Image 1: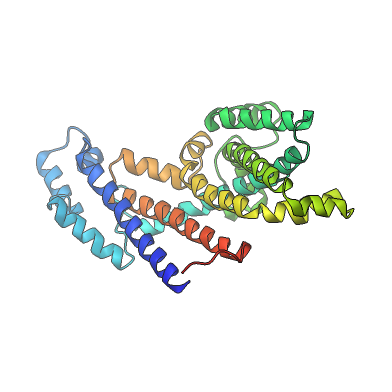
Image 2 (image 1 turned 90 degrees about the horizontal axis):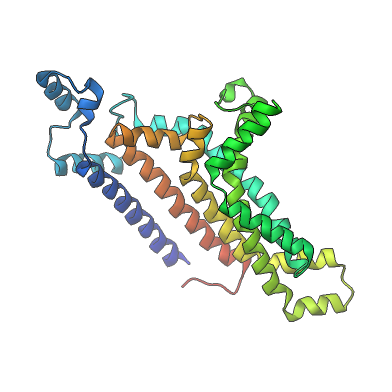
Length: 314
């Protein structure tokens, strides 16, 4: 187990390095100059050159890359070229919106997907199974931005139950903050709920056909207990894999939803960084998202060993 953890830690570092390096050199070949974007297209050449020296953009690409790697090794992601603030500070502020949004979306997806998947598997071939499967197909087909706009029109414009967008901040209280995140979380988690429903249904059907389930039913065990203690427990490896990995997908997929609902989260920060060619900020966002996905994958592997004692890592 120790050697496995060490190998995964090495994979973690290599993955982050590759992701950051790819983002660095990709932005270099894209058209556009960050200094010119800041000063405008009609900027004076002398002022443009002075700003490039101030931002360190006049150095060769490999020198700038080496400086960034040295700073990242000290957990210093540099300063934003646009906001003139430390990258770590900006990302920390935006994660206060994105992490609760992703967590709420995952909670909604799990709360809907797991029971609906179990129910569809239990009623396999019936009308309820067809209804749940059809709704899951629709949930997978609907674009998240379209669903977000529909939810705004229904619950914010027509019914006036929830805010249409924006985020008041956690200082305004938990109630207003959670109300602002409810609609975007529903739009973001709908596709994940549909995917989880299909996966839970397939995993439950596989377990329902096994001998120990038939034995439990033959002994007169109540059906609710069979589903909860026998079917769900033995399908947890598949379900936990999907739930843990979908959290990483929610973090990466929050860009569009945060734009639709005007949320000041990590996704909108990443979009601004790319549009303004803010290289330090873009690299910082890439490192955080890549690190979160790799870390969640590592946590998922550890869950394997916890949920199934037969699994061992040499």
